[in-house]
Image (cartoon, rainbow, N blue to C red; front, side):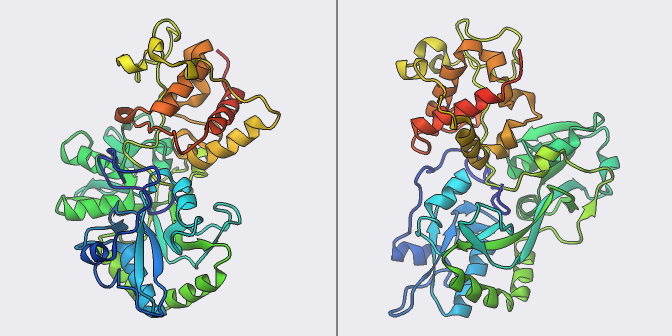
Length: 429
C-alpha cells in the first residue's frame, strides 16, 4: 500500500464501508471548495495564476480530508507549497480505494498536478512518474498499554490486532505464543483495543497514533517499528513530463522542514526513533509489499465458496457463503461460460494486472500466507466451478466480506487474463 494511503475509515475508507469509488474523481465547485477547505489549502484561482491541483482523498485523515477543521498533513503541506510557488491550491478529490488505478485515473490522466504521499521509489509505477526528494518517514507501529514496554516479549500470550496481508501480520505469524486478531484497517484495530477484543496492536502508525490522540485521549503508547517492509520514505509524485514542476516543488520543500515537523505534531504522528524488534523480519513476500490503499471493506478478495455440489468438502469453512445470491443456480450464463484466456502471453499479462492491484491483499504473485484468501487454492476449493465462481465474484462483489465489484475497473479481457495467471499458480489438490 502506498505510504499514507492506509485509510482510517471504518466503513469505507482508510477503513471501509461503501462510499463513492469507481470513477469518483470530482472537483468541488469553487464555492463549495472554499467552504470546505481552509484558505491555506484552497484559494480562488487568480487571473493569470494557474492553480496547483492536488490529488487528495476526502476521507483519509490524518493525511487528507475535506473536513475544514482538520484537512490533514498532506493538504496543509500542499497549501504551504502553493504559497511558496505563489500558486493557488485546488484539491481534486478522488477515493484512493483502488491504489494504482486511482493514480491512473487522476495524476496520470492529467486531472491533478501532484500527489503527496507516494513511496519514494523510482521504480514505483515504472517510468510514468517522477518524485520529489523524500520529506517524511512513515510505517507501522506497536500500540501497547502505557505501562508496558514495547517489544515482542510484551506481546507473548497476548491478543494482538494486526492488519490483514501486511508485514506485521506475516511477522507475528511466526510466533505461536501470540494470538493475532486480524483486522482490515488501522481504525478497526484501535476499536479492537478500546472495546477489549485485543490487548495490543501492530498497525499503520500515523492512523493509529492519530486515533489514539483524537478519539482515545492518548490512552495507549504508540511506538514506530523499523525493519524491512515496515517503514518507508515518502515523496511527492508527478507525471514523468513534469520535471520542471517537480524541481520547483523540491526547492519549496527544502525550506519547509519546520512546517512538516509542526504538522506531524499537529496530527499526532508517531514520534521518536523507530525501534527494532528482536528477530523481526517479515517473510520475503510481504517485505516487498509497499503501503498501498488499504481499506476496510473494499480491497481484499475472500474466496466465495460455491454451493450446490461444486465445492470441495474439505475446503476451509471460514468464508462459507450461504446467501441466495451467491449459490450456483443463480449464476448467469456469462459466469458459466467464462473461462481463462488462452493466448500465449495471457498469464504473464494477467500477472502484471494482478500485481498492480491485488497483491497488497493477496500477496505478490498470489503468494499468501493466510489460508482463507490464498488464491492458489481456488481449484482445490471449487474444482471445475473455479472459473464461474471467480467471474461471479469479481463482477458482483461481496461488500460485507471486503470484496468490491470490479466491473468498470477491469474489462472482461482483463478478468480472463487474471484468471489465466491464477490458473498458472494453483497448488495441487
